Image (cartoon, rainbow, N blue to C red; front, side, top):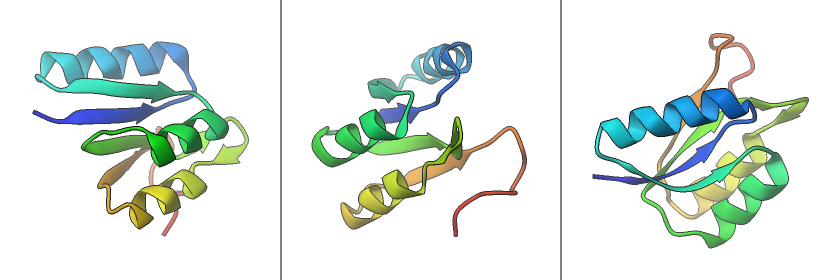
Length: 88
């Protein structure tokens, strides 16, 4: 199974998603709730893929996605607001 970087600013949602990933047999390698900590993990941590909340408070997760893309780490965006605001 995969080790996953989980980026979500809402603590309860992050815990729920982490539990669901564990139930599916995956490991949460690192968690972040803001762009600064997500950037650090995206640059330095080892994991197989990332699950990124599109909006972290008033900040976009796009810089994190750019770092992951440069490292050739697969990622998926998650949003409770539909496709609006999802980076290209």
